[in-house]
Structures are given as C-alpha cells and as structure tokens.
Image 1 (cartoon, rainbow, N blue to C red):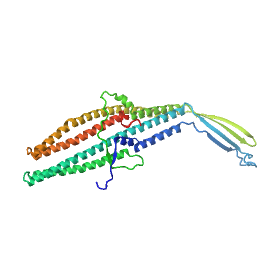
Image 2: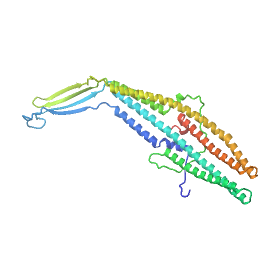
Image 3: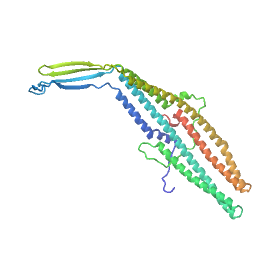
Length: 407
C-alpha cells in the first residue's frame, strides 16, 4: 500500500508483556490503591475532641474590668476521648485488609483475562496473515488459469463459456484478497487495543512475527479441576470478600458493646475559683435499639459473599473443564487437518490440475477441486488458530509462568 508506514513486528512474548500492564490492568490497580487506602482509614482510634466554652456571662451587672483573664466569665477548656470496646478497630481493619486482598486478586484476574485476550488477538492476527498469503496464492493461480483459458479460447480449444467461468472465479479470488487484507487490518487493530498502555497511541500496523508455536501439551482429563479452581484469582478474590464480610459482621456485633467516652476539663472563673478541674465519662445507653439493622445488613452481606464464592468456585471448575476439553478437541482437529485432510485436498487439486492439462477432466471438475482446496486451507488455518487459542488460554489459567514467566 503506497505511503503506508512500515509494519511493527511483534512477538507473542512482547504482546503478553505489554498486556500485563495495559489500561485495564491500570484501572484495576487504581481500585487496589483505593482499597489499601481504606486500611489506613480503618486502622486508627477515634480522634480526641477539644472543646472550649464561656459561661455565666452577667449581662445585667457586667463582667468587670481588666483583660479577658480577669473578667468575670466562667471559662472552660476540655479534652474528650472515645475508647472503643469489642475490638472494633481490629475488626474494622481486618475487614479493610481482606477487601484489599480481594482487590489485589481482582488485579490478577484482570491481568489473566487481558493476557488471554492478547493471546487470542495475536493468533487472530497470525491467522489473518496466513489467510492473506493463502488467498493471494489462490488468486495468482486463478489469474494464471484465466490467462491460459483465454489463450485456449483464441485457439478454439475451449468454449468461451468456460473461459467466462474461470474469469468469475478469478474475480472472486481478487475480492477474497481484499477481504483478507481488511481482516488483517482489523486483527492488527484489535491486538493493538488489547496491549495498549496508558498514554500510548494505538499502533494499527502490527505484524505477528512468530510462527505457529508448539504450546505445552494439554493435561489429561484427570485434572483436579476443583484444586485448579482454588488457585484462580477470581476464586481468591471471592474468598477474601467472604473473610471481609465475616469481619464486618463481627464488627456489627461488636456495636452491642458501647464505647466509653472519657474527658477532663479545666475551669477558670474569677470570683469563684481560678483553678477548677472536671473529670467526666459517658456511655450511650442502648435502650430500645440493639443495632439490629447494622447486624442484619452485615449478615446479609456475608451470606451474599458466601453464595458468590460458591458460584465462582463452581463456575471456575466448570470453565476449566470446558476449556481443557475444548483444547483437546481443537488439538485433535488441528492434527487431523495437518496430517490427513489438507494433504488429501492438495493431492486432489494437483491431480485435477494435471488431468485438466491433459484434457482428461472438464473445467468444472478443476474449479471444484480448487474450491475444495481453498476451503480446506482456510479451515486448516482456523483449526490451528482454535488450537493455539484454547491451549494458550488453558496454560494461562493453570500454568501462566510457562508463557509469561514469573514477572
């Protein structure tokens, strides 16, 4: 394409490294930072309260002469401090800490999903590149056949109707090339979007440079899906939310232990005494209300978190089972195309080409053999793509270090 910028070659490893810290992961990290700030907000005692007042101001007889200290005003200053009972601070901090653990697991979950999305987009681009190569080769063959058909028509060796059929096939092949180019551009943009980092412009002219890799073998169907599911970040996040809800429930129950507020004050009242000390304590009386609303809400949140954990555990195990089965099926399908179906389609097409040149078969049979080969080539690309995507997703869900290391 004239004037087009050169393609940026990208390996799968580079795509995965970029996807680990893309914008979606950055957004999740923002939630983690907020959750960690909540720990600081929770882990402190109630602040002391400083109070001051001026009382017994005699508006009838006046307050006397002199400065403020000598005037007949009852001046008071005091300090009050609430002492929490029932381990409220510890429970409040524990709830915030577990919520932060859940947010950290959410970051890992988002990262895994972004890695899977980037891997899928990378193989989509690789498949689009291969489809473009295949259809361009088919278009060149169709053009050569069309040129040969026109020469045979001029020589009176082929009916004009057959030459017209060949020309139609050639035009269809050219249209397929244009569609393949568009599909490749769309796949490149999708990959660029999945790996885009904060503040980085979308690079739409990417080129996948890896060949179809040999991914780690998929485990046998005897895998312990329940144990594998426990290591999933979404399950860890749900478990941390249950623990946070439990701490919040304990904190709500602790409200039944009323906090005590103690204080001391100093009073200065000329004419009476300039050195008066006050010591006080107060405690709320839970008459008519025992924090049933707060406790009921905390209980509902706990049961909701527990149900969510059970659902995520079940869905996670089923997802892993389905993903493994899909990877095994895709592997068998891809190998079938590579070792059996595609070689047979090539032999049929080659034999048809030879037979047509010798005049042993009509043009229709040759075109049909070419159509079968074209469809088989594209299906083989699709099979390799499905295998690479499902096997890669399985690996990222169970052994991500095999693809992205321990970073």
